[in-house]
Length: 133
Length: 112
Image (tube, rainbow over all chains, first blue to last red; front, side, top):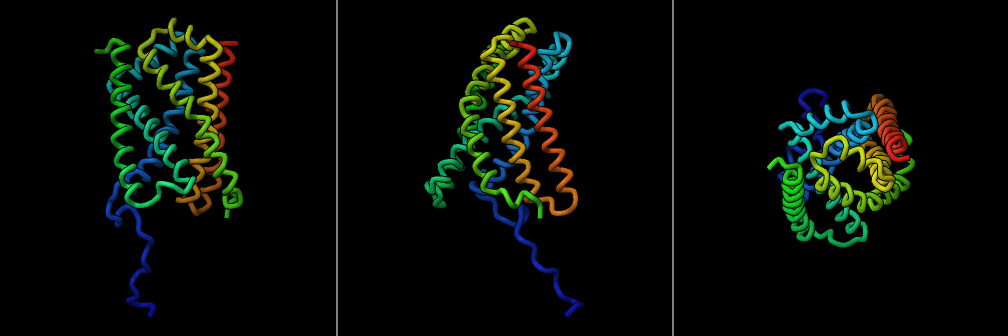
């Protein structure tokens, strides 16, 4: 049986499951967690730059205010909102409620919508206050 | 098997406890980003010099670092099964410790 034996099946992974809202929200929770890992490092750098002095602060502010910086900031705001809102859902799940497929599917879709709308609103308000538009 | 497999319950509780503490801090941070976006150095320095702002910012980063160390540890447990896991775990702890230390040092020098 050594020859011609097909490779043992691997456990299903991203490439083989049919995408569903619950699966997408689970993966997005982890992805936004990783993004926030980087974002928190940046936030600490930004906070430290104020202590370091004008030069450091103005250099970092210029980077954050550039088009690439603004995309990064929007990603940070959305990641923070998604991860926080889904964190609340996880706490609710921990109580044993909201776990049936229909509810989990609905809350997953709502989560993507709510986090995107909130992030857009917060970003628009921040840009308005910054005088960018 | 790494040590990680022996403290699942402690990590489970610590991850959720830190998440709950983060909730008001997240609202505070987003509110302050909106209020102070595009601030010049004088404004940012005055803002960070007020003790309640410096303390809230340090708390956000310190508790965030504590939370992300556990979260990243879960990813290591899920995906790294060779010798690199131990090294990555140490690096993860080191990065989180440095980030938290930076925030506390900055808060201390800005407001106290």
